[in-house]
Length: 429
Ligand code: HDL
Ligand code: ZN
Image (cartoon, rainbow, N blue to C red; front, side, top):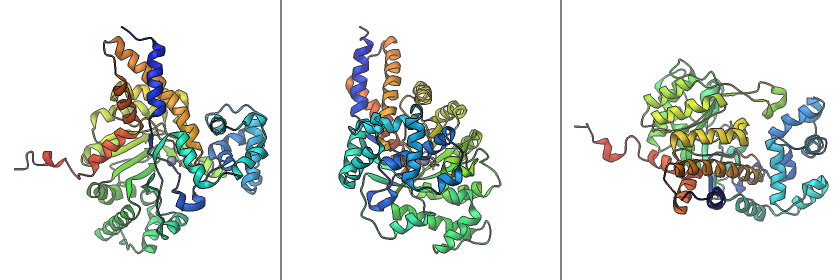
């Protein structure tokens, strides 16, 4: 008997809304990193997504905006995107969702009252409240050994909150080697003069030091559309000779975020990045040439999504994740997730939040869970039409896989460098 769509929707809703999320990529920091962990209404409003949107709604006075204080910038954005216009964009609507979930009334448009409320929150209790409302089990941070402010906190050996998992971010190492080599030297890792063994050893010692120091779950880099492999670029050489061997021998997956064009409008600063199609032939070449490495991959261009999914069908060491940045809209999350369910089942990670402000976890996961529910209702309805009815336990299992379980299974394999031991012997004789 085909269950009523509403009954199925309720069953899926229960599973999706109650599941705890492993958020595999954010820009949040462990609370012991002090002001690096941003939260509150002004930080929500000066989110770089809203900065770029606010410039579309008001005079393009870059210097005046950047010379203003954070509260002044927040007021500029509040006025333009929430008072003068309807907060229709995903990021603007997100602020509304977050405020409502906290029991506040944004329609009063009373920014002063909102600020009053946030000023009365104690950081520790507020953190717990946000993680509870958003249903978070853990978040992966973005930890850069090239960020001197962050390195300062690591040097104080902070007491860590286990829910904030480290991830080593190495963009400068691959994309700006001439400057990165100076950082390595300053930190006591002496690279050679060229592409030589001394340089490889210095980079590997650097990666090993930081991976162990922060206890990272994976290494990550974002790449421009021009990134290609194999190639004669520094990135390809460092990847081949240092980063991928490091990852194999230290149980680290390698995360690749493809297709970002940095600073196409530098006057918007962090809000000034654009997109371009990543070269997925390079991804295929990486997966084929390094079958013992595990690649976590997300693409910024919509037109790359199908090719990424097809490559995941070809390479078991490739794990697609998330609806990154400009893909993080209900329409594109639904399109990408349906494509992935149809071609990969549950062997991918549905979403990551990319949150930069703690409170964003609330709206990013509230919005995404609703889309996931609808995608799964469609998938289970089609499955039922074919004569298979899933149990509530199976729905719960599938949801947990999509919200971090598949990611954890994928990484668990990375802890056994090379092929799983029992397979390693095959053909070894
Ligand atoms: O490179 C990245 O990790 C991106 O997520 C950028 O940080 C980007 O600015 C962002 O916040 N996207 O959501
Ligand atoms: Zn990010």
